[in-house]
Image 1: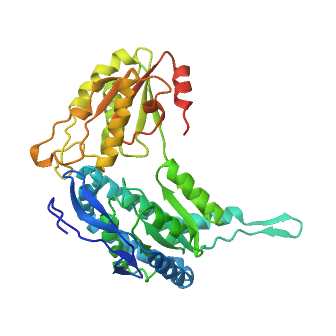
Image 2: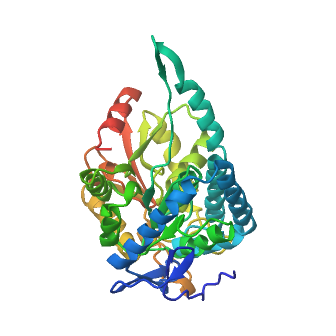
Image 3: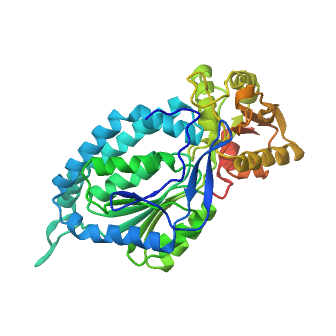
Length: 421
């Protein structure tokens, strides 16, 4: 698999019954190389028939798969791990091109994917241990207690753009190893990596129907959640959509696991060790251009920490090389889309209008001519942010460091805890 800036992947397909099949819905969503601003794939919408076909494929596979001995199921997972390890570099470059994260960051995503597979490989032994703990003889006179864990059926997985392979693989290996089957609906912004990844399940020996994928957006996700054969939903994304997913799943009697937005505060004390502290702060805020759920969203500087660290943090951020994501020399790639870039710029502009002071303004980033069409936004540091500002309260999901000052640690904790998340 040769990943080049000139790659065009055409109209993507669904993956149902171990086969790539055309989606039958109306319309397509363009998928961009965010570093070039050029369309590299067309993401089709799936029809209700497509969704029904995928779920019924998973449901048909469930009876046989759930009754397959667990150590036989594990053999497929071992083969999958070997395949992923052998193609790590190919998929890292595919992720980098489609998401905009640097190729080094994409390699990290693939390593985390392998770790998720490793975790699932240990699941049977973990279950055996918990069974020993849960099964109790003579809890009461003539009463024994036994805990039996059984696979439930078809699970829907709805994943975001920022980790197109790793996040689906948080759920898929564990679900299928324990005897369930799945239907995945990835983000329409950059599904190419996980669409190509699906073929590894077939190569690893998984039977048809165990793992399926349908393309589309919000309407397709809702149809998938409501399908009567789906027993549960795993979702990662914004709180707004997560609340809708949770409500819809619960209203149809389904289990739901929803991991949503965050605004992670960093409290910086004046006695922190300078070098590792600065490096960790810079990496936290600006790795992946801030497009991570666990990225810090607010820097609270306590007492003298503001005077001691601020200039050094700004100077370190100025050294970040923003550029095309597939270049090994790039430290920070572009934003996922023009829409997302515009949203982040809007938040910066409103913060400045409310009194925030830009010490480093990523809106003014200069990019080489070859990549000027990309969705670039440089590291941005905003001082004089005050509690209650939108930029202080809301998740930015971009390369922005809002700075709030606190007089002591207790005030810093109060600021950190005054938010909706």
